[in-house]
Image 1 (cartoon, rainbow, N blue to C red):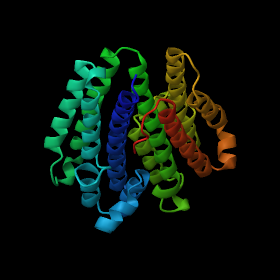
Image 2: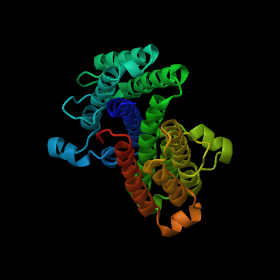
Image 3: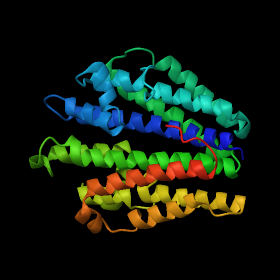
Image 4: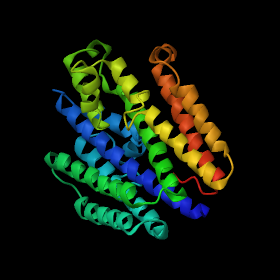
Length: 315
């Protein structure tokens, strides 16, 4: 496969995954803000921090209020990290590699763009936010369903999956990091009803609340939640699950092309070094440090994949 085609597929699905993750974070910020009697500024700042946009936002808008953050991350067409811009970038990539997509995947992607282009125009009432975010997730699910249901399991599909799971691992790690270090206003509230509600909201943001309760019941324990989001290999948004899939798809590419790439070895090292640990060892060394190192390694893997398969890194 040409490097340009591989890049288009890889980045198309990174942008789609990133757009959905941003929608999920906005939903989490909105729900957590509702649990606070006072100012919700810290929740909106935490959302901006997670998506790496706190500096850009403050330069343009100053204080983080719900309406400003929603517009900035949803419909601001001058912000390349807004959902509308990321969906457009995904659609532009899809159009560039249309020959490598099935008709169903292209139509779902194009329909998603047209739907959101009409929906995400200007400002809208804060009360409408849940419905808007639900529509974004549903449109993304249509593309994902068309992809898994119609595409050949060839090298193109492997680049699709690599883009999806590299981005998903990054997003899950950032969500978990922000919960520990930004959302709680004070250490005195750890274990409080407020703390429990926030943890439930974070689980909801990665579609894991019900599956977590299947395993652990109604007890909300931060260590168990961290373990679930990092190491549980059956949870589709956990780091462990993502890296099993990344290693699988890189393995298929190596088999297809008849040579083992450095990115394959790097992915296996990340899986073994970071996800072969116990939660006790992770907490002993520091969760924040663990996540920071993991994010760096995950970013380096994306760069290595681009080098191995001759396409640009993107952003």
